[in-house]
Image 1 (cartoon, one colour):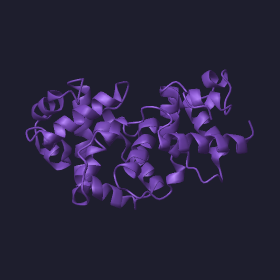
Image 2 (cartoon, helix red, strand yellow; image 1 turned 90 degrees about the vertical axis):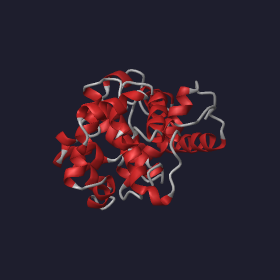
Image 3 (spheres, rainbow, N blue to C red; image 1 turned 90 degrees about the horizontal axis):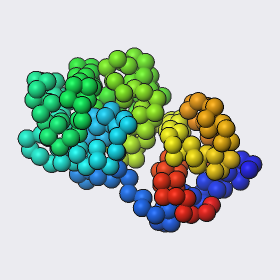
Image 4 (cartoon, rainbow, N blue to C red; image 1 turned 180 degrees about the vertical axis):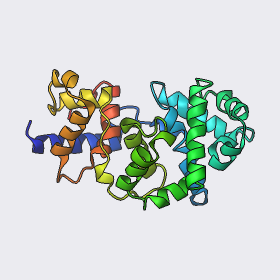
Length: 247
């Protein structure tokens, strides 16, 4: 297909997603406390810290566990970066494992504590971190993936960082500048959609790197008014639900 045809197909898939024609389209992150405006820091922490543990696991179960942890007065403290910095490793471990936010008692707990301490020591809060980046995706990328990379295990990885940035702008209430620079993360579902829409061939789905697939999408959508990351959810559900909607 020509780029114009692919863009038109993307618009139809977006419309199908919004109108419920793609089947079940409840995102894992839809499982959240329903924050009000005054809970900005809590909202940012809620959509930041669990993201670093969202690796090779069921995202729905992760966010269900996060909500239970947030709603429990005894474990809610793990979403406060300053309090996490003051607590012992044992206390944080017990809280994170109570509802299985953390599945690995050492690695997951260490990841959570490292990120919380990095944010607390350098900015004092997630909100201040976002402010320090001028709410700019490119500046945030520099901070997380370059300047303080060691302090953000897993969250600094390209796939999770791009998706976290998308979640910040979609659920976190952050109006990110340069949002159009957020790459779509070619997981299994996005890659299958890429083949189906002839953005890549079946052979290329194996031979191309994730960055190369992301760049292919950036080229296709350039000038269309569609940010690459905006296609993540529509593509994810289109593939996950068996392509029940024909574009």
